[in-house]
Length: 206
Image (cartoon, rainbow, N blue to C red):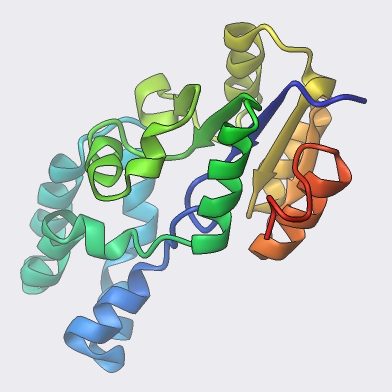
């Protein structure tokens, strides 16, 4: 089936989302492990993806865990160090699709207020034809309603959408709606898929 649009997840596809790496560099691995065990920051961050402002989430967690205030505030104050670096080969694939005039969308669990912050740090995040950001929509993957919203907004049949995401549950939900999917594990595998679909040449996908 021909592909009419390619859809990228962002975290761990175009930019790394491994906050542990930042904290390991900043406070050391042992203290980072204690911090994450005490605060469960990843769980709290789901509120941001659902639409709660990043700073509000941080203030709420500080109130719960005042002994970790400095580390918790880094989640906001050092956002572009947490959600980083870019994944260069994936960025090249995004650029190549855009050069080839293939419509490219973003479908991401991301906060409405910190997404523009990341776009300032990584201008390639401004190059999508359409942006589907969970914090704006107040719908999160893998909720089927966010995939339905994409279909209705872009007007493209599900089987003509090709979606790459690093999480199997998100891929499964998209496939259940009839989307073509790719479970992202590394940029080369995604490059090979785009070549196989005839969207990029091998040279473009290098």
